[in-house]
Image 1 (tube, rainbow, N blue to C red):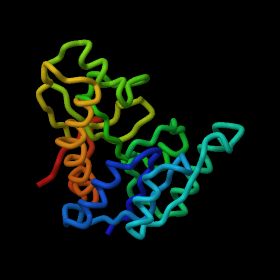
Image 2: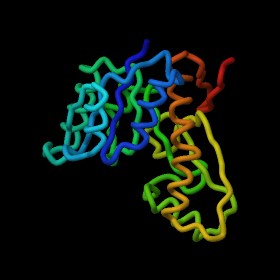
Image 3: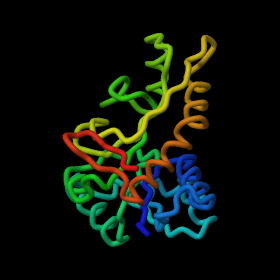
Length: 208
């Protein structure tokens, strides 16, 4: 049973999807043991407490130097015995130390089909605004391992939906969350926890 630590900053809808998946037996080889927030007032912390999950807060602004913050976050994750770190709407930049310490053990979900609409500046509603501005017909979400290249790590899962003519950034965001993010993130976590992901040449192979 692997220890899963989830990093959050806001409402925690993806965290809730993970909690529900654990209860429903979708995640069966891992357990969410801690939720760490960059924001002390994040509702995600309340979700964790309501489900008896340990919580912690670490704010970037409490550290004068970024390197000190990077080291503190790394040490916090190590102290929580994290086997897997899941970024579920964590809005603080990650440093070299923490990414290195959890190489191939840190999963992010991005609300677009990587390599489109990803990288620096593409987050939250900005992604969906760009999708609609470009007029693409399909969008979706991607789970991937975290590397020092923003949104550039090995892809685990992708799923797409049709972009509707009357979509707004908010309606598209909501549909992608409900129909894709809340489904593929828990499955990706379970694939990791059951040792079914092999990484080779920055690509993943999902084992049967």
